Image 1: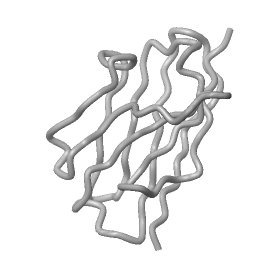
Image 2: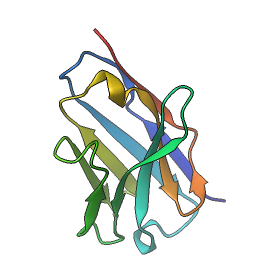
Image 3: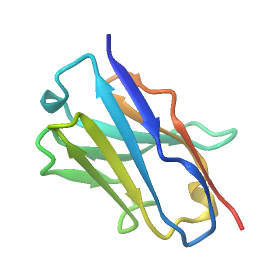
Image 4: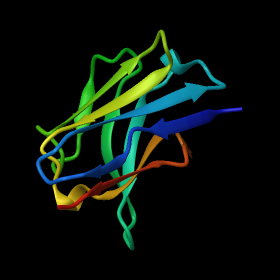
Length: 112
């Protein structure tokens, strides 16, 4: 059974930083590209970032490019999202995904 468990969210002031983690199990993590999505209150799911299975190729939404960094540790089966210069509009539930499967998410709230 695929399990994706996100952590690391919280309340942060504008301009602050957070690092999200996603612990993966139930599949061969190193065989799959992984993605982060987010969903703000009252809005649809928004793609944030993708990383290839080797961790060599990364893609970002224009809204986060230059501020967020996706990475992975295939030895530990963990996906990361380092977020800098956070803005109120980054407030959302953040989910890691493997193909069509996603975790429960971790809440990020950016507010003063």
